[in-house]
Image 1 (tube, rainbow, N blue to C red):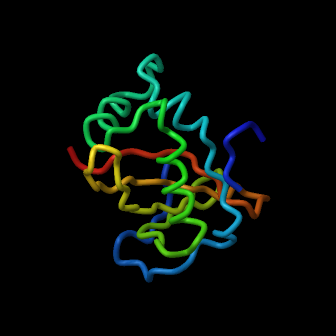
Image 2 (image 1 turned 45 degrees about the horizontal axis):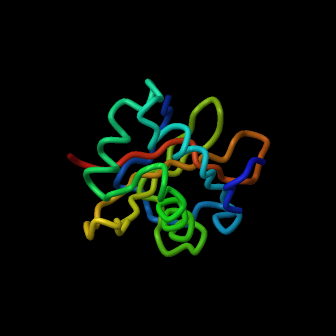
Image 3 (image 1 turned 120 degrees about the vertical axis):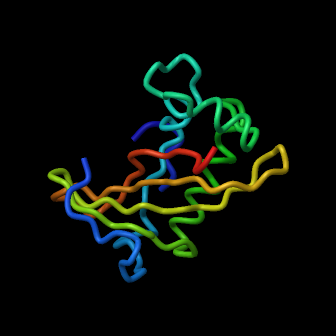
Length: 134
């Protein structure tokens, strides 16, 4: 694992699913690099507007990414926030979280964070994230 590690949807249960814990949530991995090299990186052509959304919506940039990652990681690993959607894919089980995040600009907005437990693994890892809404 590198520095900054904290700790196709198939069938979906959807938003009407019973809320439950993600297995092994306390050992979930939330890589800082997912933000510094992707979601907050204006030079990453695959980020598709995420850096702008995070900076305008919450005031997060690469420079203060660790604070954003810590809020997401703490919410998931504490079990305070439960997944609101669970789905299966050929790669494993995906758990989608809606996490209220406080930004340095004073705004609070929801971040959608998707963790996956790969087939053959027991450890959830963050696979994507985005700021909810506009």
